[in-house]
Amino acid sequence: QVQLVESGGGLVQAGGSLRLSCADSGRTFSKIAMGWFRQAPGKEREFVAAVDWSGTRKHNTDSVKGRFTASRDNAKSTVYLQMNSLKPEDTAVYYCAAGGAPYSPILYQTEDAYAHWGQGTQVTVSS
Image (cartoon, rainbow, N blue to C red; front, side, top):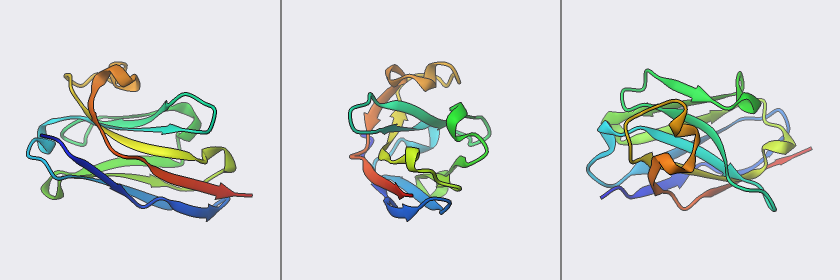
């Protein structure tokens, strides 16, 4: 079973950086695509980034392009989200998720693609 444990959230000032990590304690990490979502108070959960199982195919939402980079280290069963040039509007709970379907950059922008979710980690960006 996939068991996702997130870390790296916290408080940072605008313009700063954070790196989120999501470790899979299960046994199926290396052959599944992974994604990152976020949810701000009063808002629905939205797509941030996705990466296929090999780490070579990636897609980010427009609001984070050029600032956020998703990556993975299958040897460590870990996916990362490097967040640079953070803005107050990036404040949200960030979730990692493991895919439950073959990778598609379109499908993996939707929650329907994912079978497992982490607990979420709070990212707060101050002005």
